[in-house]
Amino acid sequence: GSDVLKISDISRIRRDNNDDLKGFQRKEIQNHVNSIVTYLDSGPVIFPNAIILAFQQTLEFKQSRGRSPDGAVSGTMDIPVYTSDRRASWIVDGQQRAFALSKTKNSDIMVPVVGFIAPDVQIQREQFILVNKAKPLPKRLINELLPEIGAELPSDLKPSKIPSELCNLLNRDKKSPFYRLIRRVSDEDSNSKAVIIDTALINMMKHSINNYGALALFKQSKDGLSDIDSMYNAICIFWSAVKEVFPEAWGLPSTESRLMHSAGIQALGNLMDRLVPRMPRNKNMKSNIKNSLLLIHNDCAWIKGEWEFGMSWNAIQAVPTHIKMLSEHLIQLDYKASGEKD
Image (cartoon, rainbow, N blue to C red):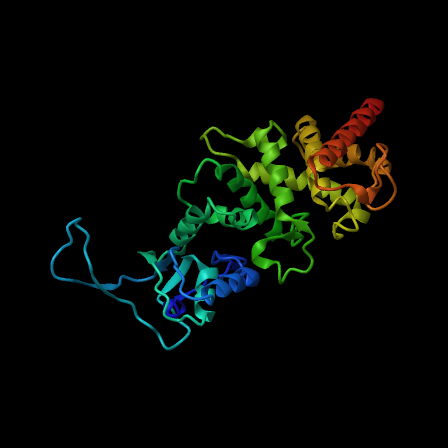
């Protein structure tokens, strides 16, 4: 067990200077590691959980003489141990166990290892997601990795792939109203300006795509594929209008602005699903949306005051009842204002 980290390393999820996604593993969970170390140090123990490694090159295997009755092939595999920081493999599953094994006093614990050859990081990511799918792996980590996966995904992961890809675009594009405002797993330590959790936007977009909202208009084009460019354009137009109509509430932490809060994002997303489809898709689309939002501006309590349905601005939480209540109120305000305008 103590030798695992001599031949393997952790591929941490992060973004490079070009904003390309690197790696796939989350941070070390110190409490989890410490609890495993305590167990391993308690005396003679059994370690039945295999660590899964992705080797970046073909390894030399020397078969033993003879063959076992069940047809299995036994032998010796040579795994190089480098003197530098380089390692022969990446840990796909079991990083917390590997760290614990490197710290335990029981350095001679025998550990089962499953290895496969995968020089391509995309294959490593695919296996990482599939191996961890049934475990409580952070949903945000899976969501950020999904756009980088080219293989066929399980049916329960497919709905998140396009929203997560749009989330990446919104965070990278300097013309996006959400530029550098979205908190993603890969850059939480470095992006201090990020105030919107990615899950809020992803849930908002998933709801719009799957419930006949504004983005569902572009769910399938003539070639059977979703028109992501049109989805992105619609999102930018609507939320740029929101940013300009509510500048006092934009870009603040969610503790200071419920517009940047998960509840506000999802509620305004429901309003987007009402406004965008009724607007002519022309050069005046953004100004038309702004005009509609301006009509309800004074009735919104994003950073102070109280909503008409009896809740103070900072009492709104990201729970279904509050999101529903806020969504219905915004839609009612729009309905009344558009009727008065007509």
